[in-house]
Image 1 (cartoon, rainbow, N blue to C red):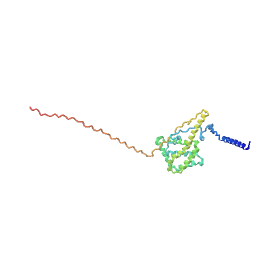
Image 2 (cartoon, rainbow, N blue to C red):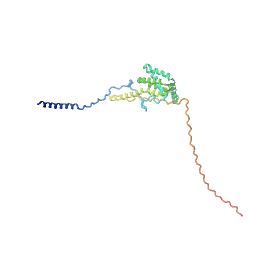
Image 3 (cartoon, rainbow, N blue to C red):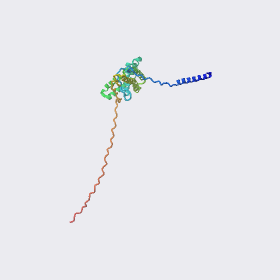
Image 4 (cartoon, one colour):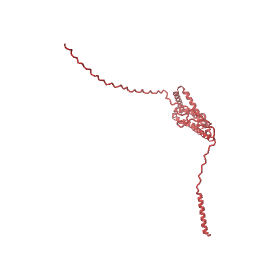
Length: 278
């Protein structure tokens, strides 16, 4: 075979081989199938080291869990903040007992406004409940102290308490009442977050038991909790006398219009005749 013809055949074979290789490279890749979702095979555990079988409060109309801090006035909010910081002073010993030092300093710096708030709360209860007001207030105080003492939440609560305590010490006493509702919300947030985490744990636990054939059925709240008492509203200040409403003016009594006079028919006049002449 002549060299030129052999070279042409070689080029043809090389071209065909190249095309085959290109065609092989352009073959569409297969779609990568995502792996199946990981099924949780380990039994869920309560968050933050909490115990099993806890109940969580119901959700209120505002979307938050019902707590003894709902529906409070400014004076009551300030007193609940004081109780929360008291709990922190007794249980938060990190950072050189900063929570305790802040609490003692707050009692000294803001003594007057805290005493006024305490007197106002007493007045609220007495106005609302009379002779049983103090007993009802002590009952709510116990509920509030127990609320802020929930063990699993103490680490995050202590951090919030120190932040609130520092802010209260940095402001004048005259600003405390206005700040109290915001401070109470900040102190309660760790507990609201814990309740949501625990409710999620109960949901996942129920799914796990259903998936693996457990015989125990977990409900959202194993032991329904009673709604916490609601503090009374703000009572009027001492010496307040409500103004009596003005007596309503009665509408003038409409006298009936006098009846039109009835026309009396004229009495016929009988002419008097002179006596007959004899």
